[in-house]
Length: 196
Image (tube, rainbow, N blue to C red; front, top):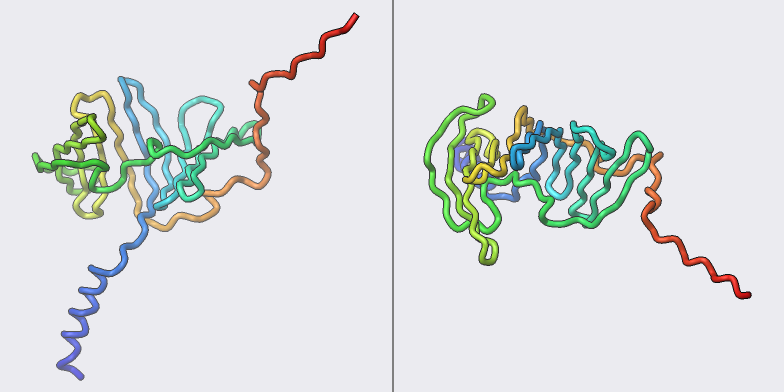
C-alpha cells in the first residue's frame, strides 16, 4: 500500500487541477474613474450575481445584478422601494483574467498592488469592428484582475481590499419589506371630453 500512496497523491492533485473550477466569490472595494469622475462602491460577487453598495449620494443605494434571472434590482433604501430593470451584458464586472473579445495580450511589467504580486499586461480586444486597448494588472497569487484601464485613460476600474471568500445568498435577494416602485412618469389617461 505504501508504494501506491505517491501515485494516489499525484492523481488527486492532478484531478484537483483539472476538475471543475470553483465559482468565483469575493468582496472588494471598487473605484471607477470615467472621464475624470470617481465613483466608489463595495462589491459582493458570486459568478452569476453581484451586489453593488454605492458610496455616492443618490436615490439608489444598492444595485443587485442577477444575471441568472436577467434582472437588476435598484434599491431605494430610504423609501423601502425597488425598481426592476432588464439585465444587460454591459453591466458585467470584468473580474476574470481574460477579457471578452481578447485578440492579443502582452506582458509589459510587474509590481505589487494591495500586497499582491501582479503582472501588468497590454490587452487588445475586438467587438465587431470596434478595437480597444487596455492595461490590466492581474494578481498572480489570487488570479484576480486588481485594475483595468483603457489605454487612453478615459476609463479605469480598480479593486482594493479583495477578499476571496464565500458570500451569503441573502445579499442577492430583494429585502422582504421592499415594495415595487410605482411608475411616476406613466401618462395619465385622457379625460373624456364633455359633450354639450
